[in-house]
Image: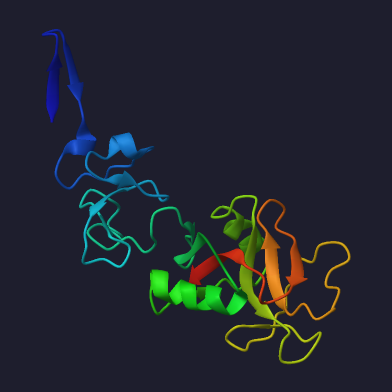
Length: 194
């Protein structure tokens, strides 16, 4: 598309041509839609779980497909895992149910496999304490994720865990450090969709 500005300047805008790949920097670059974390525009589409569909001018591998994660998510681009912070407070069990009720059946409290993933979930968080999906309620000192898999990576705060009847994992949204807490405490929570 060519635009004549003030009758003097001819400007070429190849990104607007049908079939041309277009990258965005912010929501203003995407009229009627939003700029996603991968730099491509999306538009509302209620048939997508996220409520958004990539535009036809996105990269071929995503053009016209549903955006994998809701707005405000932290996204692991290597495998499209999504992390969402829920600012309503609940007990640990209530938080697990809340992930499913608010986001869908594929969602659960976040389980964190390594330091990189620990940093990634902080992109969805603020400075609150959040429930994540670990617990040692089955056997004191034996930590497992809510799906029963053993926890192999830990990011304990100094002095944690204190193993004093506090059986559920919380993550400090400001530091990324973990602590054990009483499962009936009310906290915000971090949900994940693999």
